[in-house]
Length: 116
Image 1: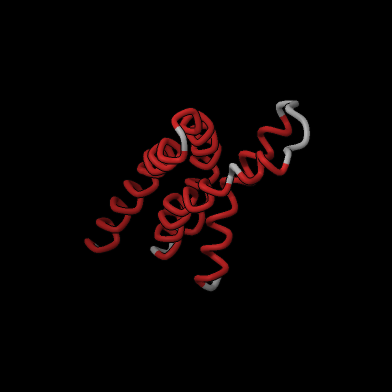
Image 2: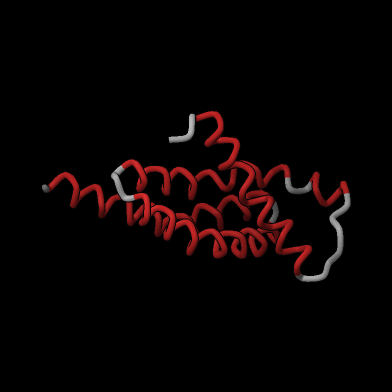
């Protein structure tokens, strides 16, 4: 397992990096310093999905955790871009909403794990 500090750093970075990659791949060119600075409020918004997947991984379901992340991460990036129209609070709300399926998977697997 990755130490908590490294995990939090990676959990904070994946969403802004995904937004930057999507922006550059869509042909909007190189991001300016102002555009990069506008991504600072997005840093903690990747943590809900990251912690949900980490929780799934801790239930001895690493493949489920990675598949969940692989499916929900692009959806979270799109949700964050849409939420960006409403500002930082919109980004946070959409990111949290996009991570809810991962938390649901965690709770279902947790129930199954406890019942055994």
